[in-house]
Length: 194
Image (cartoon, rainbow, N blue to C red):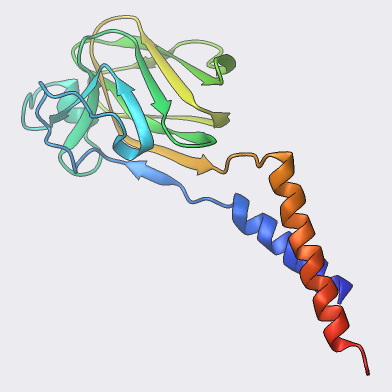
């Protein structure tokens, strides 16, 4: 019985922390370059980002940024952006494809959690207009991604992340353990010979 209780507890913990990778390709948005990505899209608040279709400017880095579907996201004001997780807990940011819109430039990334810098790229990463570059950051436990650029507009596609469960409060953990212990005690009493 004890082994069943321990096994069930470990399985519960493992499934609670498991999360699948989500990839946002921005194709369910309009692609209208004058409309900002709305807060809450994909679970994030997108500051100074919009979407653009590959057909809008076919001989540009915008068009080359589209890896899947029709649209890519881009920094509509040409400056730095902030992408904040709007849900509970944090996210593990895997990466995304990036191009520069008009000229080669350098990008710098920072991962923040609760207003504290947790991760940053050790040096800038060069992107061109010719082909999308997969930038794999694989940062765990962030709630904000900041992207700084050296030139002007850039575009991205296939923004990939995994939401992570919020860390339960101690009282919640104790209540869960008490409930599991109660179930184990009840099962033990039920299985005792009369």
